[in-house]
Length: 143
Image (cartoon, rainbow, N blue to C red; front, side, top):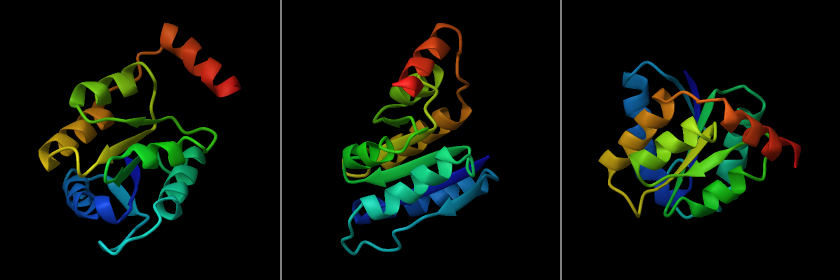
C-alpha cells in the first residue's frame, strides 16, 4: 500500500519508528517531514500529506503530533480527506469500517508506541463496510 506520513516535532520519534515498521511490512511510504524534534508549525507538514491522499497519490495517510488533535483538524480541511483521530485500536477499526477514513491521526504524548502501531495495523487492514455507511459518507462528501 502507498502511504503518506507526516508529523510535527512532538510526533517525530513515533513517526520514525512507524516508517520503519511499515517498510518492513513492504508498504511504500513517503515521509513529508518534519525531520527532527526541533519545534515546527504542524500545518506545514500535515497539509501536504492530506493533499497527497486527497489527490489519490497515496491510498492512506498517517499524521502525528503531541495529541493528534490539531493534525486531524488540519487534515480534515482538505476536501476528500476523512481523517480520524484514534487513540485505541477499536477507534481505528471503526474509523475504517464505518467512516471509510483515509487518514489517521495519532498523538505521541497520549499513547504508547505499541498502541500507535496497533492502531495503524488495524487502520490499514480493516475494509470499509459500505452499505448504510456508504450513504453517510456520501452525505459528508456533498456538504
